[in-house]
Image 1 (cartoon, each protein chain N blue to C red):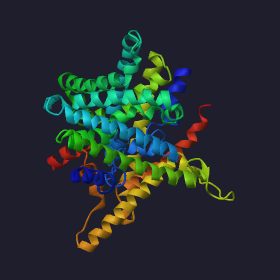
Image 2 (image 1 turned 90 degrees about the vertical axis):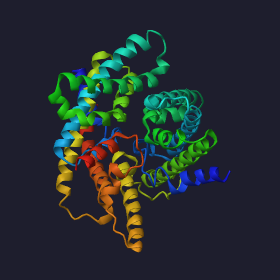
Image 3 (image 1 turned 120 degrees about the vertical axis):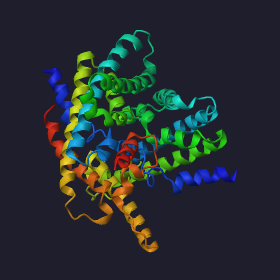
Length: 234
Length: 191
């Protein structure tokens, strides 16, 4: 049981996919124009992550190593299709506002990354908690970014007016450039924290290297493979 | 005329990276030098155009015929993954010089959400065959334009005095944000 709780803590805090690992940036930037969209996307991803983690973990001894990645993709895509239809049927407003980003959950690095690095090596029970932890971590990340952008870009949170009526909303924050700026500040803060920590311990850290593809934890992503190829050549 | 509008719309107005946030990983990862960025852009144009042709044909002649359009996500992602592998093998055998130029970028494209994104957008907007191909080509050209401009800016940024914590990805994102604002200027092109 303690191991399961550790997986939850790991996903939500120490290895938070949004704030620490910086995974799944495409949906993070695209759907966080409002808090509702952020939480909707986060929970949808969580459900798919839990289901696919459990399924992949249950089948981990059956799937041959050579075709594991196509097999994972088929499993994830099936769950995405099911969830997409459930959303269309029961929460049509969310389905309309997330649009094309629901089917694109298939190529979300978090899901394939967890399948490869955790679910394919651990039992169903722990994989389920890993999925819950990572999914909630992602949901929290998206919701916070959504709240921030909605509050300053529109003056509301979850659709309720928060800012006084004199407040002039910074509309750029809920448009495309705002997503880039918010994310840039987020990574810069993360770098600052890491630099301060390194200074205390007396080690020098280069920001550029750790943020590059080589520092990423997702072994499945093509960017990392390319970075590894380049470093081998050197 | 309509096709021209689709192409311009896909390339400039709804730029795939700067307004739809698809294909961000290669946009940040492979934009350090102009020539690598151009290579990546070329590979993306090649793959997305072929993928639009194939997925559009499969959608019309297989999925719609058999009335199984609900399987589109699964079918498209598998077709794209297989297609990229196939293109890689085909280029290696028949056009070694092109393979030399594009080869390293091809595995990067399988995980690129822009390819799947274009196939899904084609279906969503119920484009016909020709419109789908033009839309795919335009989207890929838009990707190439933005990644090459970004690489050009990044080569200059190297010499600037940036705060320590903004070095690397953050300054790239700030630059991308400014580019996205500039690209808003194109939104008047199409009503």
